[in-house]
Image (cartoon, rainbow, N blue to C red; front, side, top):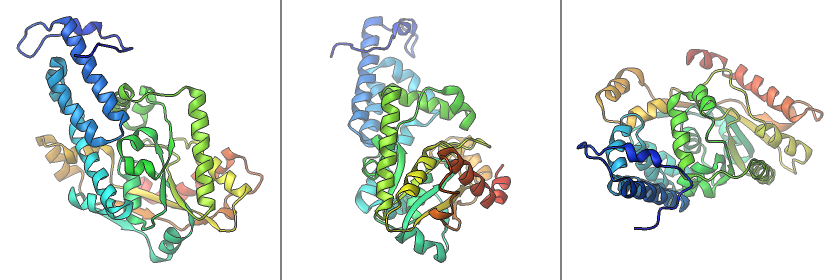
Length: 349
């Protein structure tokens, strides 16, 4: 067994017992737990949801503590099934590309969905320089958008940990780093399950320094602006994930627009609003779990297809004035977006 090197303090493990009530040997169990955690970190660093899934399953064998607790934890948050679903999505995108791969993934997991992209909007959505922007109530948001929009140059502004789990998406992303340990903030955004999963990710994802985060995110926004300026497209969700009402929008979309206003190139750039409806992470968790409560929720609460709607595109020239600051651009777009989808936002409240 490898030596137990870990910056974390696992001294409390000496008080745990195995499922039969026998005391765990502190040294051996500490090593087993640390080795399991190190295996998870290595699998995550290699960038593949399938490898991380397999390491997660194996951890139940290498640590008696995890072998006893993870099955209980799965009843609260379906990590294993979630990783299996992510691996399935990655395989589909890798084989078929983003557009067809996402479509076939939703078909394979029997998730009903509808896309409302009128032909008058589709021409711009699939052929012009476009910033897609909208809400992000579920893990599916970027993949639903990719399934709707058929263009090979579709890109994402996505969190680095998602890029790591899904290499095909990572290769088509401008990665953004987000804090993972703001439990209260994430609780308010989308409940305790979101806060919990962020804490889990923080065990395997090494966070850079705050300055490195700022520099990395700034570099991604610059790269994204250059890409769109040259005729590409990308999706950004300025409010972050979750379903919290009246959430603030982050400055990223304002910075992106400001850069393009200062130098947009020869092409007309459009901002194209979208809204995902009738979906949440809770609906996804219920779909992949097998318990009686989940079956009732799927039959009674989470009925009808997931929907994604696109509104009329906004030419970049109509977003505020050249004198607008980044924050004024953000406020302008947020107000415009909310006015477009006011009725559906009230219906889902």
